[in-house]
Image (cartoon, rainbow, N blue to C red; front, top):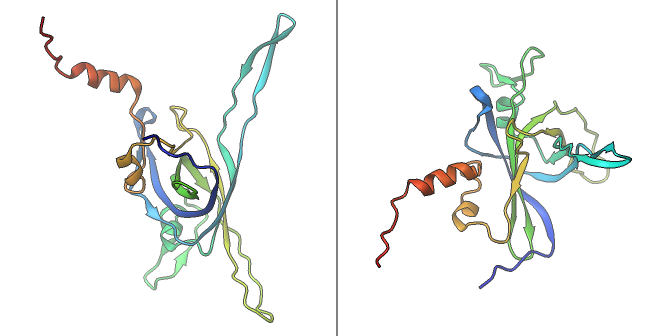
Length: 206
């Protein structure tokens, strides 16, 4: 029976981050995803527009400028683990978070999902950076108002060109279930072909 396709999406949830390390030759390695509870909203705009190359009196070639995404992630509170792992704030012996201008912030993958009318749609952005959040607040008036925190995000391509991935109508059940256990990295087509060629051939009877 064919999978039913989602018609709508709503309700951001299950936001996670996974630290990214780029090895020799540009090979990415991801840490175990860590939950970021309290996600309120995410808004990311595509960065990079196609450009026309003109020759022979017209558009000869269209250049694809996929530079990733820029935008914001709003949270009830930024988790302390994210502050120490990614924003590189340090906890001193008294348990106080210290921000230092000399440290370099960490890159990470961002995982999240939206509800759908049929199935949750799970996403991963592979190469993200976050700017330091601002400090904002106001006094209570007649009623209490929850005051959220916001991270400015930039998601850029990995050296192999990958920007993001998301689950679809026919995503493998194990891949879908394990989305937050480890960052999904697709098997390259040439690797899959090599693995297939390495399998012993079945004998064919005359």
